[in-house]
Image: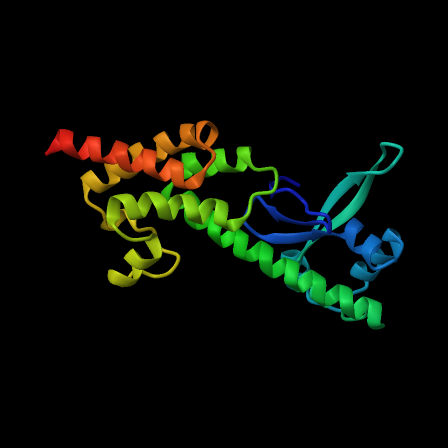
Amino acid sequence: MKELVPKDNYGIFADSRDTARVDSVFVAKVFGREHKTVLKAIENLDCSEEFNRQNFMPTSYKDSQGRKQKAVAMTKDGFTFLVMGFTGKKAARFKEMYIRRFNDMEQFIKALVSARKEFPLLTENIKLLHEDPKPYHFSNECDMINRLVLGMSAKQFRQAHNIEKSGSIRPYLTDEQIRLLDILQKADVGLLIAVPDFEQRKQHLKNYLLKLQQKTA
């Protein structure tokens, strides 16, 4: 299965459809069960075909001998349905931990999707630069560019113009604002490598924007 965000240490990842999932192999390991037992438990779940199709996706992995083996990639709902039957204090502790990690991944996906709508080029480069990208890697960078050009973050712009939370702000911008945002996005891609310090990078972009505005004045 193609991964938008790679698996963390507990097997939680984001698939290519921006959905948080967890690998059954990791669930078996963390909860101290054989993987074949977990797969059997998934097969025997008393849920509807629709729920099964939406929340349990067949995938595969290679075992220690390089052989391809079956696995299942579960959504948060699928995982929750499965581990209802796992009892004991240790299992309860792991359930809580997984739910927290799912929530963190879902927050990350929302930040990534929002950033990707407005700054696709910048978003791809941030993912390349950080082995373990966090939501703030995207939101901080995008907010900085928006504040420089618009005087506010995308969230503030949506609130000011009554735009739904997940909606793109670009249709509400002027041609000049879009032009400047795109230029700063491309400039920031290069600065991410050359100037790793956020405040220094911000000052470089601020000076560059000032020059652009002076040329068009």
